[in-house]
Length: 106
Image (cartoon, rainbow, N blue to C red; front, side, top):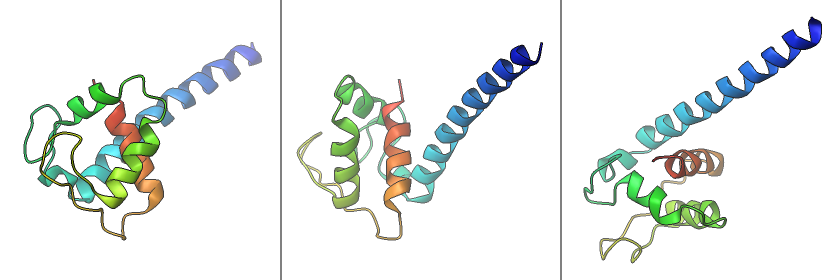
C-alpha cells in the first residue's frame, strides 16, 4: 500500500514540475519583452513560436543554437529582419527555460 502511494506521489510531482516549467518559460518570454515581436501562432515582426518549434523539431542541437541566438541576436533564419540581443538582465537560466518552452510549442 505504501509503495503505491509513493508511486502516485512521484508521478504527480513529475507532472506538476513539467507544468511549472512551461508556465515559467512563458512568463520569462513575456517578462523579457519577446512578445513585442513574436506571437504563438502568427508571424509578426519575428516568426511565430510554433514555426520556430516546427523548424527545429528533431534537431538535438536546437536548444543550444536557439539559446545563443536569443542571447546574442542574429538574422537569416526566418528572413532578413535581425533579432536584437537579449538584455544582460535576463539570466542564461531564464533563456534556457524560455527556449525549452518555445521548442515545446506545437
